[in-house]
Image (tube, rainbow, N blue to C red; front, side):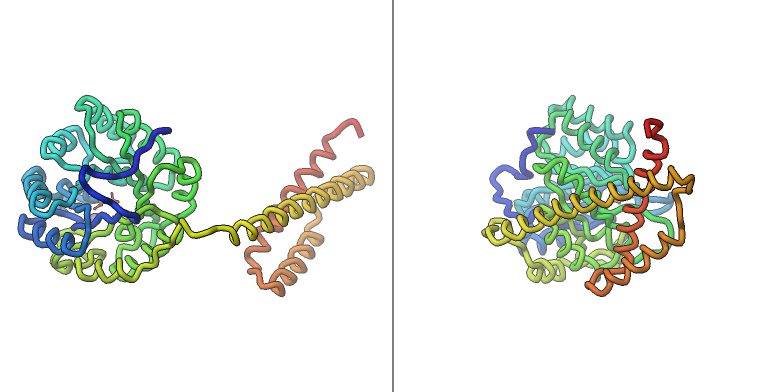
Length: 359
Ligand code: PEP
Ligand code: MN
């Protein structure tokens, strides 16, 4: 994925952060238009609405289907916004392309399924589609599966490509509806720096009051945009009502978010980073020296037929180091993790010495 293009639409000036907003589901033409008019009035440029809804259990609201596509076309004509919907099958892609939908997103249940992803990719390719596509992370925290899904879409010739981070399913009760596990999108960014990543605070939080803090966290981490569920009457929404906010509340949140300036002079930062680099070098050098001593201890134990693991010594090390770290303002939990890793490596080094038959 070497030639990724920014998410833009003809004749539209999209500034960062990209904001996509609209209801979880298109329910009626009125609800769609009313929501879209308010959002557009507040400067939102990209409108989302689910037409086909993947529900966990049968009997839930499964979306209005193709009936809703002309409603989105109307939004486009009336407000000039670009319009987005979720697709999961060949039929969805064909209907959405025929209706002139500008942006397709692939839902979390679909991106976890390589057969479905390939079917979508093949359909896009056959139609030589020129749409923007956003791929949500799969429900399970599997970065390779997410990347694979993105690669299939890229392979279909789609260049306006991006990822949506919507959190990951977890069993049991949690603060979040879907755990953010930020290290996954961060690793995705490291591997594909040009790929836009949009955060979906609505599906991560699952609650209205979490939309603002999760959005701020995403912007602080350098995400390229937000996709937020907004409904003209959230309490009466047919799906995801506890996480949808009115266009007015959305506007308020967007106005209070602090947008970090990545064009800021980074001179002072780079001095601090050089300090970090130097300290890290020292840290690694010291660890290397510590391991050398460990190997000497291993040699001694081998010559005196002693066993490698001596738990009381390890307990001792752990408790003194943890105390010291706490006195220096670090968490005990952190130091325990660090020392268990150091200890593991020491033991590995000593096993190497034990197995070395040349001494
Ligand atoms: C949605 O965006 O409404 C949706 C169904 O999301 P997800 O695939 O993230 O659950
Ligand atoms: Mn939803």
